[in-house]
Length: 347
Image (cartoon, one colour):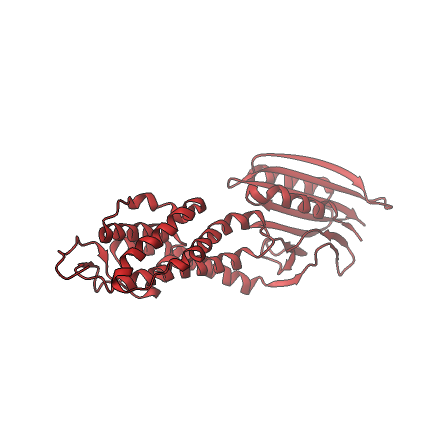
């Protein structure tokens, strides 16, 4: 591009520090990334005259198959702008950039399938840092090319963010801060008491009950995280809502009382719920154990409530379980969850 060329239409955003982009991608949970890509494609069309339809690029950050085609084209387009200006080509980064975006795009649905691999809080934080870092790196490269482009009237000079960008920040950053603060407070108040080894058996220190630990990711937490503080034990699994509470009801509370109360609660909370109860004897002991399983939906996700109760010396012991996770992982996690619930018995 030489000095005799007429100035192009305004609309190319002035370069700005990478950290300002990072804040936008991070604080909006990646929503801004879609609009960022549309804006950069629009700029590419202005600078090259290519026949591009920017708004068709809006869903690219969400769709891995589209990324495999769109991202190499995006890199090649900006290379075409930068090469005549003496900016080294970055085509060698096409495959790493495309693979990184594709992996990050599929990581969230894959975590829904295998939540026990890493905790939800840690996963989302690392994912968000990587996602914001990837797009900030792309923006830094684009800005480097822009600084050498002549006869272009940059928009937004001297402004931190545009009105739409401030709007996105105002809508999403309070939610992001609230979620991070909730995670931090939750970990401070209700810390992990003990990680429970997979395929082991938990035994109550007072010798009242035991149950099998089936699957990975189980841990005992401070009492009060899921109950009103009246539980004897609380354990949580890897799923978004996956936990058990153990209660010692004491004398005067019968199995029928506990089961009736929990089934009523289930009917109130589960949409389209149904319950089934079965009773059996503990092996080699004249003790009856009641197992109730209620199935339905909670906030759209398939859900299951289990209630396992037995009586020893006139005192009722109950293990109440809740499992509510995306359908992608529900059936697999339900198998282990059910084994834990059915294995609750007196020592």
